[in-house]
Amino acid sequence: MLWKLNLIVLSIFTLSVKLPVLAQDDSQEIELTTIYEKNLDEVIVDAIFDTATVPIETAKSLGWKQGYVDRVKTRGELKIEYPSIVKISRRGEKVSSRATRTKNSSYYVKELRFYNSNNSILKSIAISWEKGADYIYSSPQKKHLLVSKQPTEYNPKYSGGVLYDSRGNEIVEIQGPSPVAVSDEGLMIAANLDWQEPFQTGGSFYLYDKNGYLIKKIENPDKEKSAAFFAKFSPDGQFAILSFSGTGTEPTYLYVIDKNGKILGHCDLPEYRFSARTGEMAEREDEGFAVILDKISTGALTLDWKQYLFFFDWSGNLKWQVPLEIRGDMVVKFSEDGLRVYVISGVGYLWCFNTKDGDILWKHKEAWAPGPRQKRWPKDVPRFRELEIREDKVFIIGKEGKGWESSTLFVFEGETGNLLKKIEYPQGKVTLGEAHSSVSLINVSNKSFTLFKIRE
Image (cartoon, helix red, strand yellow):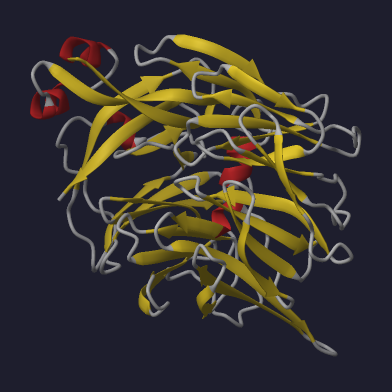
């Protein structure tokens, strides 16, 4: 998610500058207000932000904009968001448009840098690629990070992992299974991963405490057909979702456990496949979780591949499911109040569903987006790759070209689906960072990132 912003509008904004809206018809004029900027000495693939309260003069010296500081300061202090964890690119600007892989795989990430609120480096951790494949997992509120050692063809026994706190301090190293999920308490879920595609079947999940002691083993319900390789904690850490999935095909078994490893419920889906892409599952601590599942039917001469949005509660009960009219790489997110579920497809679709019953509330389809039965999909278009929700606005990053030659930022009204803003970066690689209340854009080529807010 890094980009060369020749015109990087968001990097050169000043407070309350109004940009021309490039969208047509339903667009409105809104203000994108830069509140913070920072540059580093290397290409950045991701930034995770933390919060702190600092004196006004300190905030200004760190890069916070004068106008914003004057407007929101309280008693000579300002609550700021600052980049506490930054991921440095191993391959410069040559990064993938697939956001999750670019931000977490050691193929693209060479270093984790931990900063304090004064922009001083607390610690730097090298991410291995030569020994095997390291993969980075973070807890829901970013209080812990895992560096998971995962096997490759050249080192099939490479496994285990290391748990760190948000300041880069090592807590414990796990020997054996590779951890694939971590909670804010530091609980970890691990699995016996396999480098082959498809994976070998038969593996189970292992739940560890913060000190690396095994709490419970959760057995695979179908060792002949499924493997254990994807898990995710709920935002509050009280639950975890385990996916025992067919290796490239169906079936899928979704289990819900509590923090002690007790199985609360499960749903057997013998005709469906889960991709195990992190973006295709989203969680709400009070409602449950939404997940994209594939159903592939084969006939004598045809292959029918459809995708569905499922919603489960935290007892593993299926509440509803709806078909999606076209397939593609998906990302799913809840609105901030949990009342709506948004789904994007890489081929230019955006849907909004009612969390209560799965009814579709509205849909957006790009002019270039293919129809459900169209065999050839367009290439040189800004495929929808990233999704974020802030202040009831839907932010989407579109990425164009096989080598990610350009980017587009779309901003939609979350309740109605109206397109509020569209900004094109003709030769820029732009990606979303992980901020709290603001929106973070990372400019890969400029080695910088920007925080901004929207004012209507």
